Length: 486
Image (tube, rainbow, N blue to C red):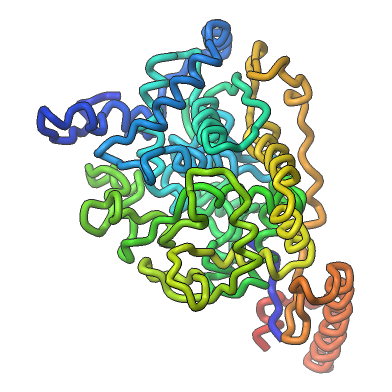
């Protein structure tokens, strides 16, 4: 029996030599430094200055400019399938997905992904290019467009271009000059002192992620073991602490993977993080194979697209997840991923995708979304708004505004989601305890786990009493990791 704790601008700074004919497509050092400041801080307007500038922001004009930017692939970082939309979905998602309801830390408010520690997280590999790509719009609109708004606008526009019917985009997130408020997210000395993670990969409450430096769960599986059952526990813990319901969790995972692809063609990795690269006077995330871009791109190390049309919003992800038989294999990046058994299809799934079929509630929504596109659209719209706007948006300008009507004043007074149920949550797995869609209900599983915990407690109690017969009775605290190892 295995016993599992809860889860999962200055151009002179550095130059890129290019020929005259390549200048239009060159990655500007100024744009790079704007999106990922080499000095790890930046000048920002005061709240009053920002609010004055925000009055002049033409929401329709900036949305149009973003749409055009996404369709303009640059040679320095070619867009997958000719459009940067999916890349920007990842930018917005990872900026927002750092939020956790246990203490309200994280989120895209403040634009702190530009700074340490977030910009050097392994999960944010190559997002320096995404921030550099959108930097010209920041320069064009100046103080009227905050970095936080810019990142969310990029991802939201990418989804809308693909066909996702997202109802609302709001502007007014106030920027911050550094990443101090993200230090509790780790890995930093402050996080290690206040919220230590004894085993990286099994981080516990109040940390929302299971692995420091990952926005969500390890896509390869808990502790890089491709076991979908264990991964499903990580998913519920991590997305739950962010404030998402089971329905919205499935919508977010399927919606995020409805577009774009994974990059794992290079087994050597993406290169040095900003923190390490800047110390050596190098550029971040240069890649360890070939050119480091295009077919040589390495991010999380998983290669392939989830759907046959990665620029189209649809529910194919859910249909194929249910209708195909998936088998695990080692991808070109050296990590476990999944392919369609007996097929030459290049479509792939992650262990965290297959995990949705190993949990009653998750499987229920996979089936709903596979059969009902309207239900999927509605759930994703709500979940995307919660992810990018409701939670973790920080301070809003007094004159914040949205593109579909009045700014919801409730956003200024968002309460932390109730995530206490995830505190100290334990999971027990056994070969005959099946939590797949054909197994017992979630309540039955939890009752069985609770009963097993009681049994383990009795056994431990007897063992401890036997060991301490010659001592006065006293309370003995035994870490669960030590108990299970015995």
